[in-house]
Amino acid sequence: MWIKDMLDVCGKELRKTVSDVGVLVFFIVVPLLYPLLYAYLYGRETVREVPVVAVDDCRSTTSREFLRKCDATPDLKIVSYCADMEEARNVIHNHKAYGIIQIPRELDKTLADGHQATINLYCDMSGLLYYKAMLSGCTMVSLDMNRDIQMVRLSGMSDREKEVMTMPIENEYVTMFNPANGFQAFLIPAVLILVLQQTLVLGVAMMAGTEHERRRSGELILGDEYSNPITVLGGKALAYLLVYGFTATYVLCVVPWLFNMPQLWQLPTLVAFIVPFLLASIFFAISISFFVKDRESCFLLFVFVSVPLIFMSGISWPTSNMPTFWRFLAQIFPSTHAVNGFARISTAGALLQDVRYESIALWIQTAVYFMTSLFIYERLYRSDKMPGVEFVITMRARMRKELREAGRDIKVIGRKLKSKL
Picture 1 (cartoon, rainbow, N blue to C red):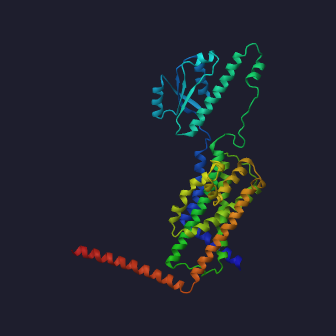
Picture 2 (cartoon, rainbow, N blue to C red):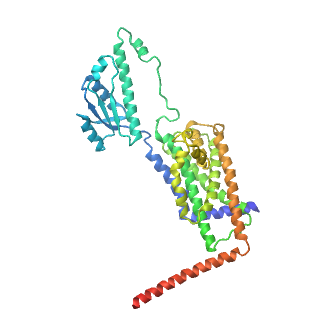
């Protein structure tokens, strides 16, 4: 009997979802479009061809070679050669470039004396990615030229001996699990998880706000159709899980495939990890929807926390460097554990035992938020089943209706009096 009631609640909840345009926007439209937007914005992975200006006070063969090699790197593009620093600063102020490479006049003399020379790099720090590209490009060129200068100074040796002397330990730079060393591969998994959680919370909260409005107006009394709150809670959770099963498949599998993002997950591991995340998010959404008294208040409560959740997840800033308060606060949200676990499963091919801490934490959150949701529904059922509650709700709705009608009559009478005067 209870299974039939739960399936009946699930069917009604699905029909409510389809018939409510606002909920459809959060459950279908936003998860469909937002991941595409974010993945497209970060599709280029890294910043290339950053415009810079050059001030060559030395005007020697060495300085020209340094600037030519900088311009040849994929990170930098010299858009102008300025006569002095004042002209270069004007270019920066006009936002035609983001950095200045300044070569001092005594560069050749310093190198000829056997001393260490300095080349100055000035960066516009309003964009850290520009700074990273400029620093990386100039550093690679300086290391390459340093090796050439050392080989010239080592006379009387074979070419192989010079290579060994200039680079005793050969190094190779390998970016594991992020071949492009870019933003998309490490940031988009976190954004995808956040999109699932936030849209689920907003949709469930909007539906809860509608129920609160109907209860206040006397249109809905809990317990009229189903006497067991567990049945209602289970039916609602099943409906949301069915909807977000398809949504999560699209967001976590199809979107990364469309944009050629790393996908090293194994299907059993991914399913076993995402199911507790969806359940924890569903019961979390039901729990906090108790504080939503109308459809619109969910925007004020939940939308603004999306950006802080990215930082608290530890994907963009290590949690070890966060204050203790924020580390503990982050444990409240299912996205904190899901972001770290899904990033390792998706980009590093982690198995379920490799993310067992995050998986256990999500199951614990599922149990805790299920209990809080059940407690809230039990309280609502008891309040609506108290003797006289139905009468009070009906009379309150009737009084509000009569007050609105009286207000309209007063306005009509006032307009008539003004027209006669």
